[in-house]
Image (cartoon, rainbow, N blue to C red; front, side, top):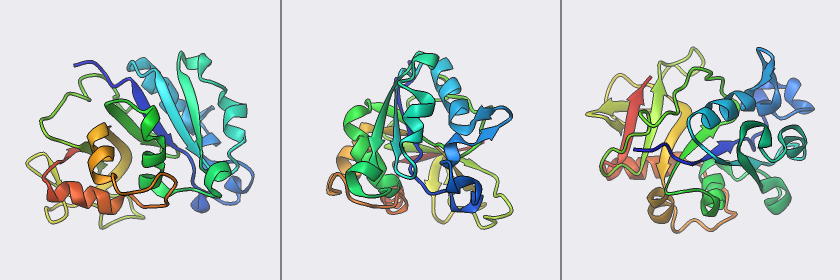
Length: 212
């Protein structure tokens, strides 16, 4: 199984918890250990064989192409899904995935641009196909600010009832079928959170989960 060739990095948010730093710079462009948060992801995705990256933007979105260009530094092709310019603001996660869908492949990574996960493995082994999954979430132990978590895991599938509950890391592997089925009625450019669509995938027993 080869690695997915495309990824969506979610970078449209306001970054409220990091104010005042994010008043003048989008959170994914803040530096951690000498490198922008989003650059850690670009490095890791490129090493794993990803070649096409979509970055959705809204808050201070002109700073992204100025900082990252077209991706040549990483051997990537970067496209920008400009939610601020096109729609007046961020579309939330489901809306962002739907808008970017035409630029993504049959299987693609979705990564929160403001999380620091330098050791995450985007390799083909991590992306091995798993039957009828429409998407797969990577879950982590609950941080202090989110003690009740998001989902449990039941036989390799995400669950809203299984214990212990863990926290969604902001990293997931999606199939185009998730967009084509669960997001089919969501108009491009509509603002919508992801959680209800993840729950719809759970109801179909089609949302995988991994505890990292």
